[in-house]
Length: 455
Ligand code: UN1
Image (tube, rainbow, N blue to C red; front, side, top):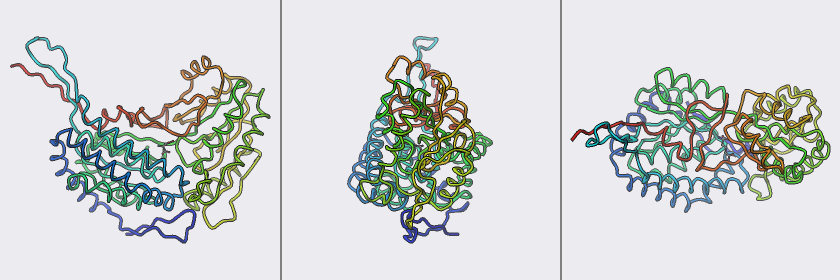
Protein backbone atom coordinates (compact mmCIF):
# COMPACT_ATOMS: atom_id res chain seq x y z
CA UNK A 1 0.00 0.00 0.00
CA UNK A 2 1.27 3.48 -0.80
CA UNK A 3 0.84 6.90 0.79
CA UNK A 4 1.53 10.46 -0.32
CA UNK A 5 2.65 13.75 1.15
CA UNK A 6 1.38 17.07 -0.23
CA UNK A 7 2.29 20.73 0.12
CA UNK A 8 -0.23 22.35 2.51
CA UNK A 9 0.32 25.77 0.89
CA UNK A 10 -0.48 24.33 -2.53
CA UNK A 11 -2.26 20.97 -2.29
CA UNK A 12 -1.82 20.40 -6.04
CA UNK A 13 1.91 20.02 -5.37
CA UNK A 14 2.51 16.32 -4.62
CA UNK A 15 5.78 15.90 -2.71
CA UNK A 16 5.99 12.15 -3.19
CA UNK A 17 4.37 8.74 -3.06
CA UNK A 18 5.97 5.83 -1.21
CA UNK A 19 5.33 2.22 -0.19
CA UNK A 20 4.51 1.55 3.44
CA UNK A 21 7.05 -0.76 5.06
CA UNK A 22 4.28 -2.65 6.88
CA UNK A 23 5.05 -5.48 9.30
CA UNK A 24 7.45 -7.32 6.96
CA UNK A 25 9.42 -4.20 6.08
CA UNK A 26 9.59 -3.10 9.71
CA UNK A 27 10.75 -6.52 10.92
CA UNK A 28 13.43 -6.68 8.21
CA UNK A 29 14.71 -3.22 9.21
CA UNK A 30 14.83 -4.27 12.88
CA UNK A 31 16.84 -7.37 11.90
CA UNK A 32 19.41 -5.24 10.07
CA UNK A 33 19.50 -2.72 12.91
CA UNK A 34 20.16 -5.46 15.45
CA UNK A 35 23.28 -6.56 13.56
CA UNK A 36 24.44 -2.98 13.09
CA UNK A 37 23.92 -2.23 16.80
CA UNK A 38 26.36 -4.97 17.79
CA UNK A 39 29.14 -3.26 15.85
CA UNK A 40 28.15 0.29 16.81
CA UNK A 41 28.01 -0.44 20.54
CA UNK A 42 31.71 -1.43 20.41
CA UNK A 43 32.72 1.56 18.31
CA UNK A 44 34.78 3.94 20.50
CA UNK A 45 33.02 7.05 21.78
CA UNK A 46 35.52 9.21 19.91
CA UNK A 47 34.57 7.55 16.61
CA UNK A 48 30.86 7.96 17.34
CA UNK A 49 31.53 11.62 18.14
CA UNK A 50 33.38 12.05 14.88
CA UNK A 51 30.52 10.49 12.89
CA UNK A 52 27.99 12.82 14.53
CA UNK A 53 30.21 15.83 13.90
CA UNK A 54 30.48 14.83 10.23
CA UNK A 55 26.70 14.47 10.14
CA UNK A 56 26.37 18.00 11.57
CA UNK A 57 28.71 19.39 8.89
CA UNK A 58 26.79 17.56 6.15
CA UNK A 59 23.42 18.90 7.34
CA UNK A 60 24.95 22.38 7.53
CA UNK A 61 26.23 22.08 3.97
CA UNK A 62 22.78 21.17 2.67
CA UNK A 63 20.83 23.44 5.03
CA UNK A 64 19.12 25.47 2.34
CA UNK A 65 17.91 22.36 0.46
CA UNK A 66 16.57 20.90 3.72
CA UNK A 67 14.96 24.23 4.68
CA UNK A 68 13.19 24.51 1.31
CA UNK A 69 11.82 20.98 1.63
CA UNK A 70 10.52 21.64 5.17
CA UNK A 71 8.74 24.77 3.87
CA UNK A 72 7.26 22.84 0.96
CA UNK A 73 6.33 19.61 2.73
CA UNK A 74 4.90 20.84 6.06
CA UNK A 75 4.24 24.55 5.36
CA UNK A 76 6.61 25.83 8.04
CA UNK A 77 7.44 29.54 7.58
CA UNK A 78 10.92 29.78 6.09
CA UNK A 79 12.49 31.74 8.94
CA UNK A 80 11.44 29.07 11.41
CA UNK A 81 12.38 26.26 9.04
CA UNK A 82 15.88 27.73 8.68
CA UNK A 83 16.14 28.01 12.46
CA UNK A 84 15.00 24.42 12.87
CA UNK A 85 17.68 23.10 10.52
CA UNK A 86 20.31 25.14 12.42
CA UNK A 87 18.95 23.67 15.64
CA UNK A 88 19.38 20.19 14.13
CA UNK A 89 23.04 20.93 13.38
CA UNK A 90 23.57 22.15 16.96
CA UNK A 91 21.85 19.05 18.37
CA UNK A 92 24.17 16.76 16.39
CA UNK A 93 27.22 18.66 17.69
CA UNK A 94 25.92 18.63 21.27
CA UNK A 95 25.44 14.86 21.29
CA UNK A 96 28.75 14.31 19.46
CA UNK A 97 30.34 15.88 22.53
CA UNK A 98 28.12 13.81 24.85
CA UNK A 99 29.61 10.64 23.36
CA UNK A 100 32.90 11.65 25.04
CA UNK A 101 31.52 12.44 28.50
CA UNK A 102 31.92 10.07 31.48
CA UNK A 103 29.95 6.86 30.85
CA UNK A 104 29.34 6.03 34.48
CA UNK A 105 30.68 6.43 37.97
CA UNK A 106 32.77 4.56 40.49
CA UNK A 107 31.46 3.99 44.00
CA UNK A 108 33.12 3.07 47.27
CA UNK A 109 33.07 -0.73 47.52
CA UNK A 110 32.58 -2.55 50.84
CA UNK A 111 36.11 -3.86 50.42
CA UNK A 112 38.31 -0.87 49.52
CA UNK A 113 40.52 -3.11 47.37
CA UNK A 114 37.63 -3.86 45.08
CA UNK A 115 36.35 -1.72 42.19
CA UNK A 116 32.64 -0.95 42.18
CA UNK A 117 31.24 0.94 39.24
CA UNK A 118 28.00 1.69 37.44
CA UNK A 119 28.42 2.09 33.69
CA UNK A 120 25.92 3.18 31.07
CA UNK A 121 25.66 0.74 28.20
CA UNK A 122 23.53 1.12 25.04
CA UNK A 123 20.12 -0.55 25.04
CA UNK A 124 20.40 -1.83 21.43
CA UNK A 125 17.79 -0.83 18.85
CA UNK A 126 15.63 2.26 19.37
CA UNK A 127 12.45 3.01 17.40
CA UNK A 128 11.77 6.73 16.98
CA UNK A 129 8.19 7.66 16.10
CA UNK A 130 8.09 11.31 15.11
CA UNK A 131 5.48 13.91 14.07
CA UNK A 132 5.45 16.17 11.01
CA UNK A 133 5.60 19.54 12.77
CA UNK A 134 9.35 19.53 13.57
CA UNK A 135 10.47 17.18 10.79
CA UNK A 136 14.19 17.85 11.33
CA UNK A 137 14.62 18.79 14.99
CA UNK A 138 12.54 16.03 16.60
CA UNK A 139 14.06 13.15 14.57
CA UNK A 140 17.50 14.56 15.41
CA UNK A 141 16.89 15.15 19.12
CA UNK A 142 15.92 11.49 19.36
CA UNK A 143 18.41 10.00 16.86
CA UNK A 144 21.49 11.98 17.95
CA UNK A 145 21.51 10.80 21.59
CA UNK A 146 20.44 7.31 20.54
CA UNK A 147 23.45 7.11 18.19
CA UNK A 148 25.86 8.95 20.50
CA UNK A 149 25.27 6.42 23.27
CA UNK A 150 25.83 3.46 20.92
CA UNK A 151 22.39 2.36 19.71
CA UNK A 152 21.00 1.72 16.24
CA UNK A 153 18.09 4.03 15.42
CA UNK A 154 14.99 3.33 13.32
CA UNK A 155 13.13 6.50 12.40
CA UNK A 156 9.42 6.10 11.56
CA UNK A 157 8.40 9.63 10.57
CA UNK A 158 4.85 10.87 10.15
CA UNK A 159 3.63 10.22 6.60
CA UNK A 160 3.16 13.98 6.15
CA UNK A 161 6.93 14.50 6.58
CA UNK A 162 8.28 11.42 4.78
CA UNK A 163 10.30 13.32 2.17
CA UNK A 164 12.11 15.40 4.81
CA UNK A 165 13.00 12.23 6.75
CA UNK A 166 14.34 10.61 3.58
CA UNK A 167 16.46 13.65 2.75
CA UNK A 168 17.81 13.68 6.30
CA UNK A 169 18.80 10.04 6.02
CA UNK A 170 20.31 10.60 2.58
CA UNK A 171 22.50 13.30 4.18
CA UNK A 172 23.57 11.58 7.39
CA UNK A 173 23.16 7.85 6.59
CA UNK A 174 26.39 7.55 4.53
CA UNK A 175 28.40 9.03 7.41
CA UNK A 176 27.43 6.18 9.73
CA UNK A 177 28.02 2.41 9.41
CA UNK A 178 25.37 0.68 7.27
CA UNK A 179 21.96 0.22 8.96
CA UNK A 180 22.88 2.10 12.14
CA UNK A 181 20.36 4.78 11.11
CA UNK A 182 17.42 3.73 8.94
CA UNK A 183 14.13 5.33 7.94
CA UNK A 184 11.05 3.07 7.99
CA UNK A 185 8.05 4.58 6.20
CA UNK A 186 4.44 3.83 6.91
CA UNK A 187 1.45 4.52 9.10
CA UNK A 188 0.02 3.04 12.28
CA UNK A 189 0.47 -0.58 11.19
CA UNK A 190 4.20 -0.05 10.57
CA UNK A 191 4.59 1.79 13.87
CA UNK A 192 2.87 -1.04 15.73
CA UNK A 193 5.16 -3.59 14.06
CA UNK A 194 8.17 -1.69 15.40
CA UNK A 195 6.69 -1.40 18.90
CA UNK A 196 5.76 -5.10 18.99
CA UNK A 197 9.13 -6.36 17.75
CA UNK A 198 10.92 -7.79 20.79
CA UNK A 199 14.31 -6.81 19.34
CA UNK A 200 13.36 -3.13 19.72
CA UNK A 201 14.64 -2.13 23.16
CA UNK A 202 13.34 1.44 23.36
CA UNK A 203 10.48 3.40 21.80
CA UNK A 204 10.54 7.20 21.76
CA UNK A 205 7.35 8.89 20.56
CA UNK A 206 6.23 12.47 19.97
CA UNK A 207 2.69 13.18 18.82
CA UNK A 208 -0.90 13.35 20.01
CA UNK A 209 -2.05 12.15 23.43
CA UNK A 210 -4.42 9.60 21.90
CA UNK A 211 -1.71 7.88 19.86
CA UNK A 212 0.89 8.32 22.60
CA UNK A 213 -1.24 6.51 25.14
CA UNK A 214 -1.61 3.57 22.74
CA UNK A 215 2.14 3.54 21.99
CA UNK A 216 3.03 3.62 25.71
CA UNK A 217 0.58 0.86 26.62
CA UNK A 218 1.75 -1.42 23.79
CA UNK A 219 5.41 -0.96 24.61
CA UNK A 220 4.93 -1.26 28.36
CA UNK A 221 2.83 -4.43 27.91
CA UNK A 222 5.94 -6.26 26.73
CA UNK A 223 8.26 -4.49 29.19
CA UNK A 224 9.87 -2.24 26.59
CA UNK A 225 11.20 1.13 27.75
CA UNK A 226 9.11 3.94 26.32
CA UNK A 227 8.90 7.71 26.43
CA UNK A 228 6.02 9.66 24.94
CA UNK A 229 5.83 13.43 24.48
CA UNK A 230 2.23 14.29 23.77
CA UNK A 231 -0.22 17.14 23.69
CA UNK A 232 -0.41 20.46 25.42
CA UNK A 233 -3.14 22.98 26.30
CA UNK A 234 -0.63 25.57 27.34
CA UNK A 235 -1.58 28.69 29.31
CA UNK A 236 0.03 32.12 29.15
CA UNK A 237 -0.85 34.07 32.27
CA UNK A 238 -0.69 37.88 32.09
CA UNK A 239 -0.61 39.52 35.52
CA UNK A 240 -1.54 43.14 36.29
CA UNK A 241 2.09 44.28 36.54
CA UNK A 242 3.23 42.82 33.20
CA UNK A 243 4.80 44.77 30.35
CA UNK A 244 1.69 44.49 28.19
CA UNK A 245 3.25 45.23 24.80
CA UNK A 246 6.00 42.72 25.33
CA UNK A 247 3.48 40.14 26.55
CA UNK A 248 1.18 40.75 23.56
CA UNK A 249 4.00 40.30 21.05
CA UNK A 250 5.30 37.14 22.73
CA UNK A 251 1.86 35.57 23.13
CA UNK A 252 0.71 36.43 19.58
CA UNK A 253 3.74 34.54 18.30
CA UNK A 254 3.42 31.66 20.80
CA UNK A 255 -0.23 31.13 19.85
CA UNK A 256 -0.08 31.69 16.09
CA UNK A 257 3.53 30.98 15.04
CA UNK A 258 3.58 28.12 12.53
CA UNK A 259 -0.22 28.19 12.71
CA UNK A 260 -0.18 27.04 16.36
CA UNK A 261 1.05 23.61 15.31
CA UNK A 262 3.43 23.03 18.20
CA UNK A 263 2.78 21.04 21.33
CA UNK A 264 4.30 24.07 23.07
CA UNK A 265 1.91 26.64 21.50
CA UNK A 266 -0.17 28.91 23.73
CA UNK A 267 -3.84 27.89 23.65
CA UNK A 268 -5.22 29.82 26.62
CA UNK A 269 -4.38 33.42 27.43
CA UNK A 270 -5.42 34.08 31.04
CA UNK A 271 -5.43 37.77 31.89
CA UNK A 272 -5.78 39.62 35.21
CA UNK A 273 -8.98 41.60 35.47
CA UNK A 274 -7.20 44.96 36.00
CA UNK A 275 -5.51 44.88 32.58
CA UNK A 276 -7.91 42.64 30.70
CA UNK A 277 -9.43 45.10 28.21
CA UNK A 278 -6.14 46.89 27.60
CA UNK A 279 -4.33 43.62 26.97
CA UNK A 280 -7.09 42.20 24.76
CA UNK A 281 -6.75 45.18 22.41
CA UNK A 282 -2.97 44.89 22.26
CA UNK A 283 -3.13 41.15 21.60
CA UNK A 284 -5.53 41.49 18.68
CA UNK A 285 -3.31 44.20 17.15
CA UNK A 286 -0.21 41.98 17.59
CA UNK A 287 -1.98 38.99 16.00
CA UNK A 288 -3.18 41.06 13.07
CA UNK A 289 0.39 42.19 12.40
CA UNK A 290 1.56 38.62 11.72
CA UNK A 291 2.14 37.55 8.11
CA UNK A 292 -0.10 34.58 7.30
CA UNK A 293 0.10 33.45 3.67
CA UNK A 294 2.99 31.75 1.88
CA UNK A 295 5.51 30.06 4.16
CA UNK A 296 8.28 30.69 1.60
CA UNK A 297 7.96 34.45 2.25
CA UNK A 298 10.31 35.61 5.03
CA UNK A 299 7.59 37.96 6.38
CA UNK A 300 5.22 35.03 7.06
CA UNK A 301 5.06 33.80 10.65
CA UNK A 302 1.84 31.77 10.52
CA UNK A 303 1.40 29.72 7.32
CA UNK A 304 -1.17 27.01 6.57
CA UNK A 305 -2.32 24.12 8.77
CA UNK A 306 -1.24 20.66 7.68
CA UNK A 307 -4.41 19.45 5.94
CA UNK A 308 -8.10 20.06 5.31
CA UNK A 309 -9.16 17.85 8.25
CA UNK A 310 -7.05 19.87 10.70
CA UNK A 311 -8.67 23.09 9.49
CA UNK A 312 -12.18 21.67 9.68
CA UNK A 313 -11.74 20.39 13.22
CA UNK A 314 -10.24 23.72 14.38
CA UNK A 315 -13.25 25.57 12.95
CA UNK A 316 -15.59 23.10 14.66
CA UNK A 317 -13.86 23.74 17.99
CA UNK A 318 -14.28 27.52 17.50
CA UNK A 319 -17.98 27.07 16.65
CA UNK A 320 -18.51 24.87 19.73
CA UNK A 321 -16.54 27.15 22.08
CA UNK A 322 -19.51 29.21 23.26
CA UNK A 323 -17.32 32.35 23.10
CA UNK A 324 -17.10 35.57 21.08
CA UNK A 325 -14.77 35.50 18.08
CA UNK A 326 -12.71 38.71 18.28
CA UNK A 327 -10.69 38.11 15.12
CA UNK A 328 -10.45 35.31 12.55
CA UNK A 329 -12.68 32.25 12.83
CA UNK A 330 -12.81 31.57 9.09
CA UNK A 331 -10.75 29.95 6.31
CA UNK A 332 -8.77 32.22 3.99
CA UNK A 333 -9.54 32.50 0.31
CA UNK A 334 -6.36 30.75 -0.87
CA UNK A 335 -5.67 27.33 -2.39
CA UNK A 336 -3.79 26.13 0.72
CA UNK A 337 -5.16 25.00 4.09
CA UNK A 338 -5.27 28.49 5.57
CA UNK A 339 -7.20 29.57 8.60
CA UNK A 340 -7.24 33.21 9.73
CA UNK A 341 -5.48 33.59 13.12
CA UNK A 342 -8.33 33.42 15.59
CA UNK A 343 -8.81 34.86 19.07
CA UNK A 344 -11.96 33.87 20.96
CA UNK A 345 -13.07 35.51 24.20
CA UNK A 346 -14.53 32.99 26.66
CA UNK A 347 -16.76 33.81 29.63
CA UNK A 348 -15.62 30.71 31.47
CA UNK A 349 -12.73 28.25 31.01
CA UNK A 350 -14.88 25.52 29.50
CA UNK A 351 -15.51 24.06 26.05
CA UNK A 352 -13.07 22.68 23.49
CA UNK A 353 -10.85 25.78 23.21
CA UNK A 354 -10.16 25.74 26.95
CA UNK A 355 -9.79 21.99 27.43
CA UNK A 356 -8.60 20.26 24.23
CA UNK A 357 -5.45 20.53 22.15
CA UNK A 358 -6.64 22.29 18.97
CA UNK A 359 -3.28 22.48 17.09
CA UNK A 360 -4.24 25.46 14.93
CA UNK A 361 -3.83 29.27 15.02
CA UNK A 362 -6.56 29.64 17.64
CA UNK A 363 -6.28 31.11 21.14
CA UNK A 364 -8.87 31.50 23.90
CA UNK A 365 -8.85 34.64 26.03
CA UNK A 366 -9.99 34.16 29.63
CA UNK A 367 -10.38 36.73 32.41
CA UNK A 368 -9.09 35.98 35.95
CA UNK A 369 -10.04 37.80 39.20
CA UNK A 370 -6.61 37.44 40.79
CA UNK A 371 -3.21 35.78 40.37
CA UNK A 372 -4.45 32.80 42.40
CA UNK A 373 -7.51 32.49 40.20
CA UNK A 374 -5.29 32.66 37.07
CA UNK A 375 -3.10 29.84 38.36
CA UNK A 376 -6.08 27.66 39.20
CA UNK A 377 -7.48 28.18 35.67
CA UNK A 378 -4.03 27.47 34.21
CA UNK A 379 -3.84 24.14 36.08
CA UNK A 380 -7.41 23.03 35.41
CA UNK A 381 -6.67 20.90 32.32
CA UNK A 382 -5.54 17.31 31.72
CA UNK A 383 -2.33 18.54 30.11
CA UNK A 384 0.79 20.07 31.63
CA UNK A 385 3.49 20.68 29.05
CA UNK A 386 4.40 24.39 29.19
CA UNK A 387 3.10 27.44 31.06
CA UNK A 388 4.16 31.06 30.73
CA UNK A 389 3.76 33.91 33.23
CA UNK A 390 4.12 37.57 32.30
CA UNK A 391 4.93 39.84 35.25
CA UNK A 392 7.54 42.38 36.34
CA UNK A 393 7.75 40.86 39.85
CA UNK A 394 10.30 38.08 39.45
CA UNK A 395 9.96 37.01 43.09
CA UNK A 396 6.26 36.41 42.52
CA UNK A 397 7.06 34.61 39.25
CA UNK A 398 9.52 32.33 41.02
CA UNK A 399 6.92 31.40 43.62
CA UNK A 400 4.37 30.68 40.90
CA UNK A 401 6.78 28.33 39.10
CA UNK A 402 6.29 25.92 42.01
CA UNK A 403 2.52 25.96 41.67
CA UNK A 404 2.12 25.77 37.91
CA UNK A 405 1.60 22.19 36.78
CA UNK A 406 3.84 22.08 33.71
CA UNK A 407 7.11 20.43 32.74
CA UNK A 408 8.47 23.72 31.45
CA UNK A 409 7.73 27.22 32.77
CA UNK A 410 8.61 30.42 30.93
CA UNK A 411 8.65 33.83 32.58
CA UNK A 412 8.10 36.77 30.19
CA UNK A 413 8.76 34.52 27.18
CA UNK A 414 6.65 32.57 24.65
CA UNK A 415 5.54 29.05 25.66
CA UNK A 416 6.93 27.75 22.34
CA UNK A 417 10.64 27.19 21.81
CA UNK A 418 12.76 24.70 23.73
CA UNK A 419 16.47 24.49 24.50
CA UNK A 420 17.92 21.19 23.30
CA UNK A 421 20.40 21.09 26.19
CA UNK A 422 17.65 21.11 28.84
CA UNK A 423 15.34 18.23 29.81
CA UNK A 424 12.01 18.40 27.97
CA UNK A 425 8.69 16.84 28.90
CA UNK A 426 5.48 17.54 30.70
CA UNK A 427 3.23 16.71 33.63
CA UNK A 428 -0.12 14.90 33.65
CA UNK A 429 -1.28 13.66 30.23
CA UNK A 430 1.40 15.58 28.32
CA UNK A 431 4.14 13.02 28.85
CA UNK A 432 4.79 9.44 29.81
CA UNK A 433 8.16 8.03 30.80
CA UNK A 434 11.48 9.78 31.29
CA UNK A 435 12.35 13.23 29.93
CA UNK A 436 14.10 13.63 26.60
CA UNK A 437 16.80 16.06 25.34
CA UNK A 438 19.76 17.45 27.26
CA UNK A 439 21.66 15.08 29.51
CA UNK A 440 18.33 13.47 30.45
CA UNK A 441 18.47 11.57 27.14
CA UNK A 442 21.30 9.37 28.43
CA UNK A 443 19.00 7.75 30.99
CA UNK A 444 16.63 6.69 28.25
CA UNK A 445 19.07 5.46 25.60
CA UNK A 446 21.34 3.54 27.99
CA UNK A 447 20.93 1.16 30.87
CA UNK A 448 23.09 0.93 33.92
CA UNK A 449 25.46 -1.99 34.58
CA UNK A 450 26.70 -2.28 38.12
CA UNK A 451 30.07 -4.00 38.04
CA UNK A 452 32.12 -5.25 41.00
CA UNK A 453 35.69 -6.36 40.43
CA UNK A 454 37.39 -8.31 43.19
CA UNK A 455 40.99 -8.54 42.01
C1 UN1 B 1 9.50 24.02 20.17
O1 UN1 B 1 8.57 24.63 20.70
O2 UN1 B 1 10.49 24.59 19.72
O3 UN1 B 1 5.95 18.52 18.85
C2 UN1 B 1 9.54 22.55 20.10
C3 UN1 B 1 6.16 19.60 19.41
C4 UN1 B 1 7.14 19.66 20.55
C5 UN1 B 1 8.35 20.41 20.19
C6 UN1 B 1 8.24 21.87 20.40
N1 UN1 B 1 7.51 18.30 20.90
O4 UN1 B 1 5.57 20.60 19.04
